[in-house]
Image (cartoon, rainbow, N blue to C red; front, side, top):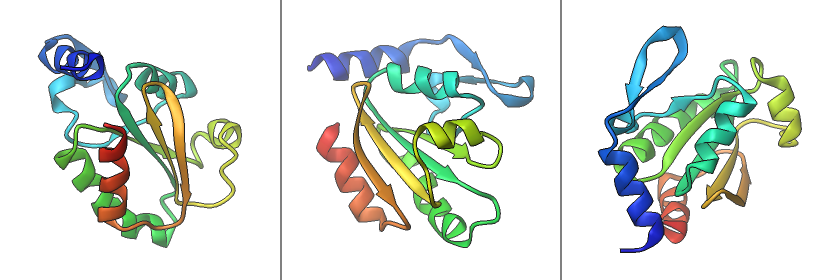
Length: 135
């Protein structure tokens, strides 16, 4: 088993809870749904955990973002990647930090490093293939 797989397994086996928006809690095991990023630090923490992280920078008013939403939800449920959703209207500084000029924009991180940037709607199979490439 690789170090990355071991870290992932340890995270999944860890019963600790983490706070989410609204004061609710979420266990690591419940990461089969996209995680809504609350701050730049929150995204940094997700990326620093290692493994593969797909960060979807989106806006509620964006039609293509709405088309991509079911794909992102499926990837969160069906892959080992952590899927993070970043609302560019709420987190404007974070979007600027990542030089997001249009939505949707997605970043793929592997082992704490940015490995891909994609602008526009992408097909599920393309995104799954990229995730698997870095898993």
